[in-house]
Image 1 (cartoon, rainbow, N blue to C red):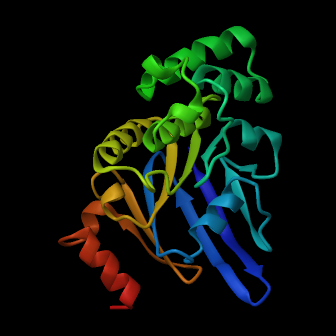
Image 2 (tube, rainbow, N blue to C red; image 1 turned 135 degrees about the horizontal axis):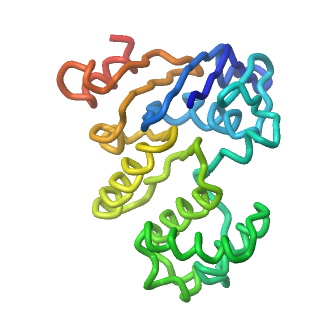
Length: 231
């Protein structure tokens, strides 16, 4: 299981958002750190096939990002995922399952399993507009898992959550990394400090660091700030 990113770039007018990034990611949680504007979201949108790179290629186990088979293994939680406030949690997941072509009986079973996984079973019949921010984010994770993805892309999933919700979310993500490739983008170092198998750091569109968490001597926050300052 491998995500291969080969020299991809993306430019908006005069700004290079992603500059010739190459990566090989295997199973586990990969934490992508960078300040706002570093290019994290552009990179993730290209990985998810929403944006087309100006140059370079992306593939999962040699399946190109443009292929239908690639989308079949992909789960994505954008920074601001859309939901229907009048839908219940169950109705929302069943609706998205139908859009993904999941058979009705399998969708019902999967919806129940996922609501249990993200601790929303007791809220499954409540309208989403009554959910807290943390509940909505957990529902977002559930929708990203409907098709049992082998590649899970999460863009700033803990933004706006309280500390207790952040811990719950991190525990959930750590478990998902045991059977899939999880790419988690954040500007909050503590979100990945204890769960990421690998740390990636972006600055001004470039990948400036890639390494295993245990390779960082001392505190990850201090290491990250040193990298951002250019040491």
